Length: 123
Image (cartoon, rainbow, N blue to C red):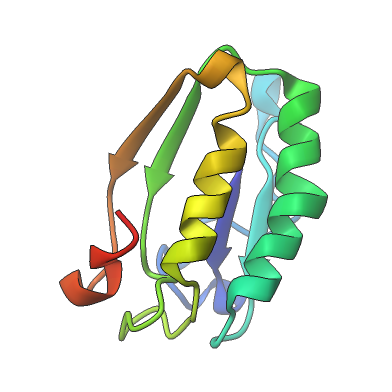
């Protein structure tokens, strides 16, 4: 599952299939969930709602054996490229909820964000 800025395909990864209609291919069809934002200034309320109403219900139904978080921080408040306003508290809340899956087996990989100060409090 991916929550990300999309801007109708004009935000990284440009041209890549990352819209809500892209649900995987072949044997993986139905196993990809994209939650794309087509605007800037997305913040805590939108992320928390998407997480509570989409991500966690699907995650519980899928019942993973392991959770892997690929943490991009373009949405972090203060990131100049992402232009979103997700706070450290919301990143912590999302991680906390994911820890309830897979018996707490969770791996986090830091992958993105363009401003060290913006992601400092989120890691």
